[in-house]
Image (cartoon, rainbow, N blue to C red):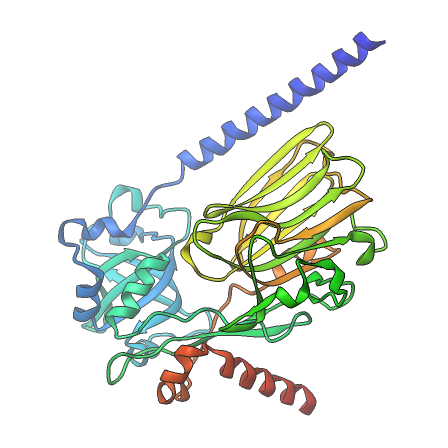
Length: 430
């Protein structure tokens, strides 16, 4: 009987390996057939810096394109690429007359014969920063750069803008709030906007647990009186290695959920280590689930009698900025991670290994040095993407420049409160 079961298990494992190998082979084949068309190649021999391109171009915008050439154009030294416009850095008024539909599509001309890789397009949309001029009734590219956060900041800096402030605290702990960040113009006038806004904590308030808001003083160590708010962020706590919360999970949940999502807003000091969140069994010392800081990254560690799983989540925690982290645990073995409003990764633990101890103690901040603003537990892993929206809404507010000295000390707080008040007033009117 044991031999039969062993054979069945072996066959199942072989079938799984065969399927996995076939899947990887097909994926590699499909990727190899995708043409690597890159619009930056057209300017390799005469590429100049982002700053020079900004200064010399009439229009600068960010857009997405698959860079597909028209067959009729391949016989001429002209290549036209269509872009889905994301935002305009420079020349917004000029460019607005070229946007004739709600889809915000732009055709940009490149004075070059398309490379063979670009005749059929890249197959995969890519984001670019496009520098261009209006010539003879057409938008003509003068340079192109691949978009990333660094290139984006360089363009804005070349136009006279300072760095963005930190994102403010979310105006609501649940049921949809607002975050904002500001920047200011270092010149007499800058094109663009000075405030960005996004929605945050879009999950409902039902069943949300926030251990940082516990009223029981006995759960705070060494004592709640020793816990101090962050000077520039009064809704956050500053934790030292001897500051932590230790509470039986039965005090906050009748039974700790087997599936849940953890929302954390954190700022790490220096090159610290320590535990942000941990569930530890009282009776089984080898069983726990924890979220720990590991240099610039986070580690999810799940230990049980049958072994230990470690999931490493890149998070750039060593940059000294606030970060919003959302991690869900579902289906006995799946961990989904979001970092700063963007999906980061999905990891699969060994099948059916996720073990949440029923007799667990909840520990927060043990041996951790840093600032902790949000630590919310929601028993619905499907809500993992609702900590904050990746979509940013640009706003122009003249009061930012008028009171910049005060706002540098208290970034965005005034604007969040003002905007939330306007939202509430609109809801009352509706």
